[in-house]
Length: 377
Picture (cartoon, rainbow, N blue to C red):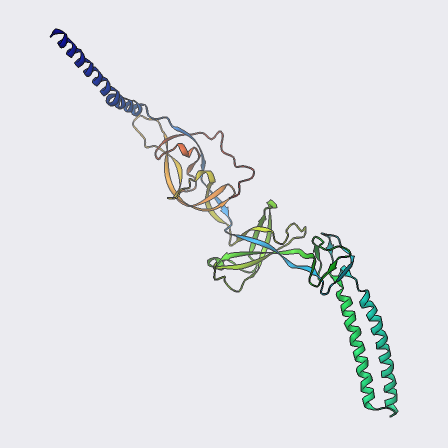
């Protein structure tokens, strides 16, 4: 009985001890930790900031365009034949009416000589009939027949000369030639493209604009154009024409601008990023792109503000999360239409560690710098 009693007391003591330990570990200790954290306060998060500022931006309408030559053709022959001469080099500049390719015209030259001989004979016969008719020694019918023969012979000569001219393929206008597509001795049929000819200065760029933006456009409106081949250069031009109708499928209207291209850096078919300058400079509030957190339910920024003053406490900084309406982006900056005012301090790095009303410490000793070349969007 004594042993059973002692064993029961020991077991009861162990149960009480384990229960007390568990209560301390899972109830008392967490409350103590929360109290210590509340008393000590969480350490502030280190962030980089930048002040929102007002910049003067020209309002622009972005568009995607394609370059087109003012005049551009594929030089082809009207008749078939063997290539006898090639009088150009690929990529060279030529003037109007320059003979580019000469097809073999030996048969036509022989026909021309025969035709000229027949024409001379017909002219002599016509002169003889005219003389006889003036003396009343021939009939009007004989004279008319001689006149018709002369006219037929002259027409045959003109036809052969036209065929000979067609076998001299000339440049229709001044411009730059492309890559040669024919060789000496090659037979070409009518319509075969031999080389492309493009007039490159000036040059057109065609681009679509939504119909709701038509009021902002007009003949002479300035455009700025960039190309992937020279991303750091801006080519300036003006709107030359606006299409007379709106595309029913896209509700866009085609616009054509003209640019100077004296150095021939812009080529037909090139991709163009077009900005139509649609007004005078306007003041906009801008921030670095890194300051904006984009999400499906809204874009937001963290604005650094002073925490409410406490009794005997020194001044502290906290963040206020604000939803903003983002406008146009240019380079590494973006315009803010609503939500932030000029002069407010906005977090530009370290947002991932923040929550609303979190305490922060500003450190701008190592600000973020944009890359030399921003990635394509």
